[in-house]
Image (tube, rainbow, N blue to C red; front, side, top):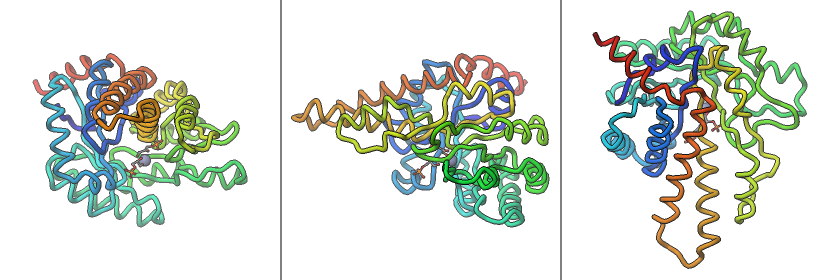
Length: 320
Ligand code: G3H
Ligand code: 13P
Ligand code: ZN
């Protein structure tokens, strides 16, 4: 059942985080639904502009509708990931999405506010909620001076002003993470002090953590042993730290890279070990299983494991 993102956030805030996973194809969708059913967890499906181009808007919607029928117990929201203004409008008008992300974080503050405000007006008129971004994710390198490093993080005072002026419903904040497989060097990690400062300026307001893949060292090692050439120093977010971020208002956790690593590991190992096989359904099946296992394990770390019934009852109660 597709629900609104704000309904999920109301249930989750302060007690668990909703995992938000990108999908591009059928195998990812099957693993995602299967894993969340095993975990009995609600979730968010994210669609990026790249995914819309790759699979086609209609194909992605059809895959999700088909999965919804195959897994009638599932409770999830459908979200546009890193949208520009026009793609937000396309998704709002399509009637299929629960929420959109307008990513104007590259623009100066006032322009980010103005763009976000326009998207919020169109989205709210159609019952969708809007995630916006403030601060600069990515490119946090160890050799950057501390001051510069902190300058990239979301400023708590700006965050409060941004939310007031833009009317957005949730905020993606820069708290030390970045997209992709190479997030941290040495002892770098999440800036909990910064998350706490943002929360104290925005109590009860859902914060979103992008770039939350863990990039397990063992996964990288296995990929490289099977012919890959990833930098072995690749490092992600320690998923034992989600539990500390949740009471600080982190309500949505975005994970994409880890799923790509599972796909790459399964397929590289499969074709290395079965050089005579060209039936792609065989590694495809293994990937769906492995991804479902990954999703179930992640739900434990996000504390969303076992929350499905609670969310179902709350949604039913609101309908009374
Ligand atoms: O944050 C970006 C997500 O990992 C989606 O990546 O734009 O390559 O689909 P993509
Ligand atoms: P990762 O690259 O860490 O998986 O982040 C994904 C993301 O933030 C999607 O919006
Ligand atoms: Zn992101």
